[in-house]
Image 1 (tube, one colour):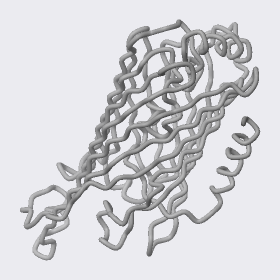
Image 2 (tube, rainbow, N blue to C red; image 1 turned 90 degrees about the vertical axis):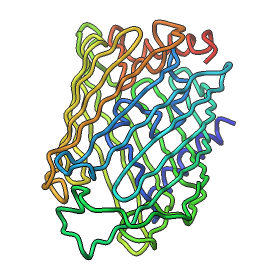
Image 3 (cartoon, rainbow, N blue to C red; image 1 turned 180 degrees about the horizontal axis):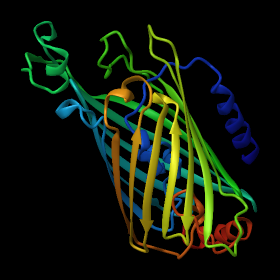
Length: 344
């Protein structure tokens, strides 16, 4: 069984090189505070049940028409190897608003003393509402600042279901995952450019290096990346890369920076972590494309920790909750036993 899982994992990585048409979910920097948003295989990998609220205010200076995204998610373990999760996301990008709901199941197993793997499948639905305006009689400034009247709404809007897949390999020193979104690729569209643009598949590959940080130092440095491979019909395929670096102090405070090839955006982020909650804030500004014409984007995340089972868990040494009191290898070996004892 474990042999076939390894083969499946490598095969999915090679799929990254194929031409996969896609659209981007409005998660942006939110995954920096909530990894469950990009891969549901993270469900149940904490020693507690996290409830995380995110809000992103994008393109500051564009008025009420600027995109805004809010989400709430929860996930936790259920039994020895299973985990469940769910998320609700609201996104508004004038003149389209969408509501997404997703429920997921994840299965985790230990491959050997140094590595574990998580496999997930999620079911979700999206409801899009499009509003149409008479742009021929409106100036660009009026459209951007929402100073015009809506002349009609899409009366045919209806929910569309979909399936997502996630896979993560956890080792002593790094995590590597792949997530495929919109497997059913419905014909519904939520793009504002044209009704001919289809909602299609896209793939994300992500990883983080948990490193060989000095166990005697109060600091830990954690680099990570996310690669998005997307494409839209009638347009060139999109390829985006996020490079992130986070500095953690005693597993309580952290600060970081990121670079996103989309808009060539530069992001700064800070946060703190307690035994019962955590908080994060990020600000990014684009230096190309539309990023040159707005005042940046803000993201705020608040998380609550429910039902803490153990002081440490496998996810305590991830980019968000790095535990640097022990070396990664020693910590992971001990936490493997903890996960089973705690029913994860």
